[in-house]
Image 1 (cartoon, rainbow, N blue to C red):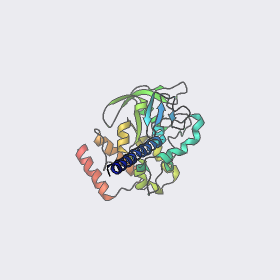
Image 2 (cartoon, rainbow, N blue to C red):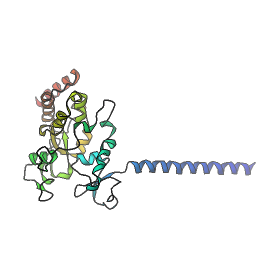
Image 3 (tube, rainbow, N blue to C red):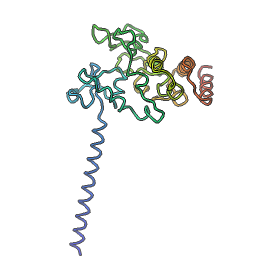
Image 4 (cartoon, rainbow, N blue to C red):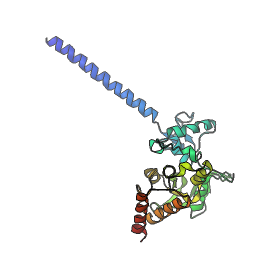
Length: 256
């Protein structure tokens, strides 16, 4: 009987060990699938499929290709076709049953006048309180300047630390009327300088697709809500009455 008991204990222990290693493999697989995108110092976004991924040691990490591109990064020249994966990798909060997709507002930042400075670069140039410095003589990508964040009042000098915030988020706009716009109007909205703010990357990501009813910056609340409401009116977006009442109260509270 003792021998049988020991056999059963051995079998049970092996089953536990096997289960443990199976869980480790599952977790490891999940981690591999969520492997971070590496943005190199030169501003190139290297997803795991990039041939330079393992060789890129000094980098800023992102959880998706889309997030890296939104920060001003670009894909390697030999991976231009990989851009379509940015939409597939977008966080769940940015795609849902409402039909919203980032691509419906254009793919990334636009360069309307064809001067190689896209709307991100132009927003950085316009907002800097000092002359910006570019990555090279082509003067396409901004690398340094002096920006005062509306969200905190902090001074930021490295462009790589900045996200360009859509004051009125694209998904919020979609849910409140932009779905009925033409694609040209949506692209204009996504690149309108009035709707673009250079701010800390971490705060832009904590905001996500929320309006002032769900998220407010640590400082500059009056300017932020005022600008949000002005853009909503300019583009004829249609928040519900509860949202409008909330904005009115916030303007009273923070602007006096």
